[in-house]
Image (cartoon, rainbow, N blue to C red; front, side, top):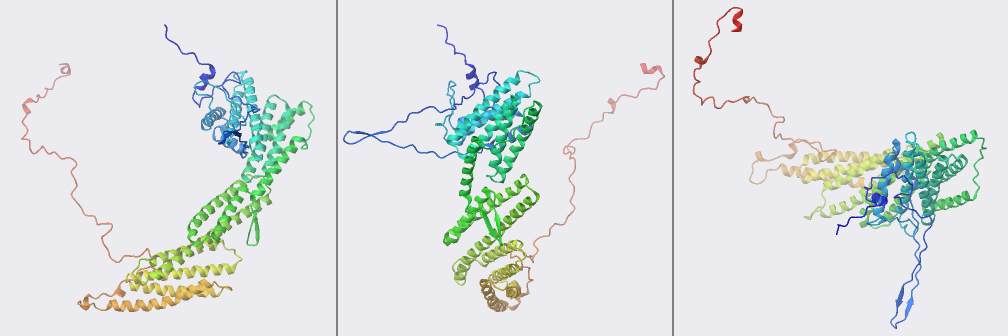
Length: 620
């Protein structure tokens, strides 16, 4: 019998086996496209049955769990995709290809494929929608139809039939946008529903404008404008800028419709916002506003330096709320948990600062008056100063808590053989305190002279303590000359810090106790250094006086500011080294020349010179 031949594939199967990046331009609008059902099919639910020990079968009735509403930032997603994939340069084919790849990617991720061997169109219904990517699928399909329609409109001059093809693709995109809105009304939250309503109004307006239905197009564009205006009053500054850009995009279309209405003698009716659809939109908007207020009413402003700094951006407000929650938890939590809480706190400080920076960047995109804009800038600057000051204060508090633990262990193991923290560790922590106070000083209010004096006194006290523990480092290494110089400097710093602290009306008790203990410790340590230096200068047993070493005769190194830097007295090598002449290397070496015997005489092979002839001799 003849061999069996495979059946030819249909046009839809050919399209199924094409790469995901290929998007053919079908002649018919319903070829190889997903079919979207606008009404969900009816489904029957079955109740499970259970069998008892006596053999009786009972029916267990279970109530269906209510799914949480989905959320999808439609306007933001559309703008990001368009700006990143060709619409910025009016490259509609590139954007259409991206939409095709994105559709294929979503199908694979949500496991919503159209068959494995043969193409079987599946519908997106309410029962299938369980995550935002199902809604995004309809959105990207509508965007692909719009992109192909715009690309075909550019070919109208070359092929007149492209005009009708573009209208069919635009109408198909409208069906996808309608299906998106119907699914959002059932499965999404109110904010997503309002964004889908605005997106559909713009799409309908584009279709009506293509058909030259000026009145319908103007009405739809005005509805979209109203929607975007209401949404802009709810979101943060970035979302407000996005809504303003959408309004600016549709304003030229509104003016174009009004111009054609005047040309055709159609009266222009003012926009009436009292119809039933607008009333329902207002109800949804009020729900969105209430949800936003319930989430961030706890922190609408921050009181600092006698002023209330309002936080208008909901994202920034949430960041401040998380920051305050960590600070409150830090005040209640026990000491062993402070380390992890401080790490979370500084990470949250970074996130909150980034949120305020984004508000600064989006401030220029908002259409505000000059006075209003200056007020917003002043508020954001005050919030930034508040964040820097609060961060520095907690950094100092963290250093103080670690210093208390180190000093306790240091005092316990100082005169024992147990291993504990060295004076270098404590000096390093005092250096962190000095750096933290220096970072706080620029953010102190200029009118708060008392606070400036207090922070200056703290900085000087911490510097004196740092110098004292640096001197202990050299006492342990028997470098008594360096230790004596550092102790003298520490005594001077203690006197200066006490003078600044006396100028404060309410001096810090902890700083007073620190200065008193430093003063006593400096005096006792100086006496110890004198005694130790004298004892080290005495000759040891079995050695002469000529071998006795005097550490005080060694040169004093500069160690007042940093214990990690000092000048070495000894000189190991000369650097850079001195240059000495050396014989150069020959360019070419003939190693075989010495082994060759004298060359033979080849003069007999040389041809004799030609005799001089006349003019005709050159021919012979």
